[in-house]
Image (cartoon, rainbow over all chains, first blue to last red):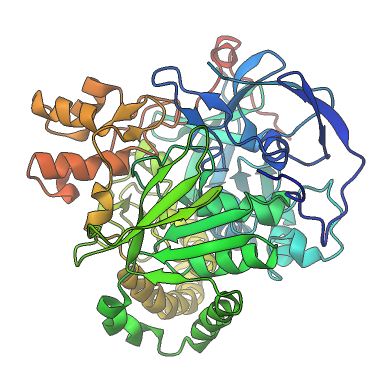
Length: 97
Length: 473
């Protein structure tokens, strides 16, 4: 997917971006963005594979109810990307098989 | 775990209903504690953009609602204390609330309680529905309005209800291509409820402006259609819709397929009833919703004395209804606590109840027109996942029923459905119609999953370190 312009530009000014690492790749994040937003804005839709069926999952409810967007952050597994703010230097691992 | 302060009134949820309940009681002289999971007040409908974003148009920073700022300010009332980033994960001994705030656990002894926990996107299970890129309509709304990010570039909207229109409008205005809108309601069957809109011309005008945008952008709207399948490798690539028959089941041969990168599911909302259930409040089966809501009386009191509900947790009525319900609940709680005498309470509650009756007429008409159609509960095929947390398919649920399970609880024990992180919030309403059909019972006689702590998952080490006594100011 062409991921240019997935961040809305009109009507908003973001503060100075910082970097986070997602599966070793450096990505820009803006203060106030959730990890889910940073991943989505960079065209990453699949956040994990389920333990049992191995199916891909990503953001579904976007409000912390469904626990589908779980990622590993700085070594802590099963963090909800949709309600967790990105912090400078975060090391995010998608929970792929 | 340590003991702590007693708040006469505890309000759970800082959306429109919770804020209004808290403010109304505080104005009557009651000290109120508001507990909310989010860093900022507003709930989902009036959700705020993060303070780190600079948004010159203040209304745009408040999810586009001009009335929001005045509502947030009500929490600054000196009698209200708000605990943000705090979730309620259990109810013990009737009125003891277990709270979690980041890495700390508290006990909070409640007296009167207003449950204003809102609602969440209703899940709809069809082949392929777990693919990344398929999101709830509420999720997309929040993403665009508060995180300022688009869900994708080519979006199909499928759902049931009037909220699809503003969402399509929002996406089009943001430059997203909307390939079509599939609306599951059969307006031909719904026309007889239109009299409920008498005196609500503003609502009709609002709908008209949204439809105008869709026409301008040449977005096809398929009425009486639902999504029936989606496919893709690691994310959604195609989505298929089909026309529905009288019972809401797809008609073979009417399928249309679209290439998409995003699907937005707006099949209404399910009330967040878990906390009410944890308090022991009796549920009521709502025919239009085809699911359970906490039973309450005119004064918003549940079957548990002193425990009130307000807002979308009761049934989906939208923000204006939520405000009026919050006001009634706040007054009734203040009255029970002795802050209002009978005469004052009756004088104050009468106009709020009248307003609620006026608004409930249109809310009920909408609920009837957009009632959940039976056929939508049976779109899954045998290998479709019903419980996302535990990867439980329809085939596994049917097997458990063939093995003798006769209710939701037994299916849970036999399959693990509902035992995962989300605690059955997503799968219970998907599995119940299957159980009802296979065991030839009415879904209304089934009981939703029993709610057990933790209602919200909390790390074990938080329990191991013990609860911290809540600071007493």
